[in-house]
Image 1 (spheres, rainbow, N blue to C red):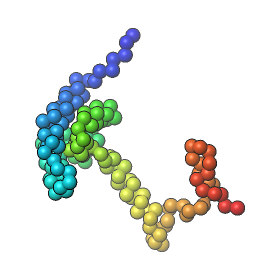
Image 2: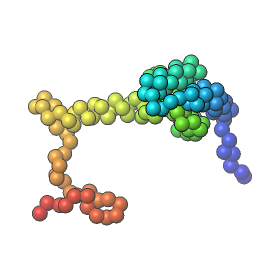
Image 3: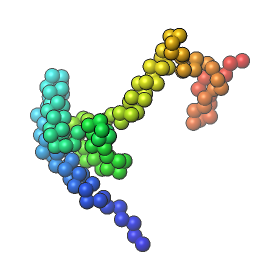
Image 4: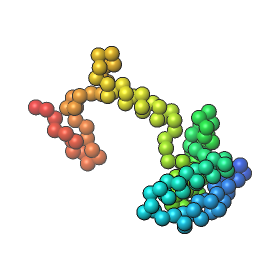
Length: 146
């Protein structure tokens, strides 16, 4: 029995749509871009992102409830592969960020850990506490205390 590695029809249509977007919108704008001019660079990326929003390709990695496309891992891999055909493709789709729940959780955790106030205890361990951690080479990353 052979394994079928082809995409489902809806994912193939999305992949084709991203390829068309990159070829018709992003690449022509890239060719006109002068990267030494920061203002032009920012305005070009904004144009690309507005076009991605209009095409329905905005935030492919984000859940739908947060305004994204809500793609899974396989669909995101296909979209990322097509977007990477152009230097600014991932920037245009805004597909470089982590999902919102990861960002929100990281921010909340960072606030808790960085806070040393009496109301919010410091959750991050102090430097030098605990056993040494080892790199892949087997050497400790810090010297154990005597």
